[in-house]
Length: 130
Picture 1 (cartoon, rainbow, N blue to C red):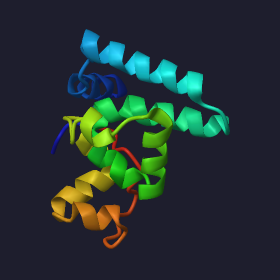
Picture 2: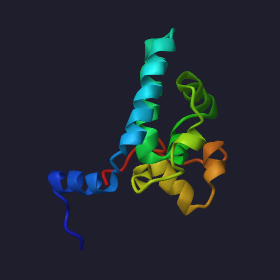
Picture 3: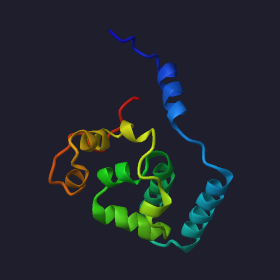
Picture 4: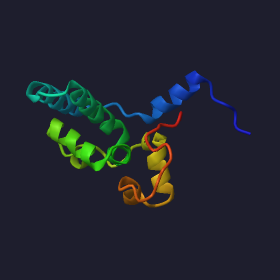
């Protein structure tokens, strides 16, 4: 039987799977953030969510984000940010498997069916602890 991880061990393990951004990527991220904030008007909740989408995209990849968000919301965030998520973010990362929905879609080999809602994934918006 596997030993249960302590909270600190779990956090350390998750940190090993996160990739610090290069200086170039950090500069690009800041430029996108500042431009987005400067040009945005409207509902502040949408801006905040789009900026979270931007940050998480680098660590989780665009595929897990496509599982979490509807196609409409995914496109809305791309439009707010002025990006193409498929070009800017990696497809997946070592952290991607923490996405319960993405892990399910990979296991059943039906990524686009899960994205389109044709294949139901329970807890598709949740992250596992590791």
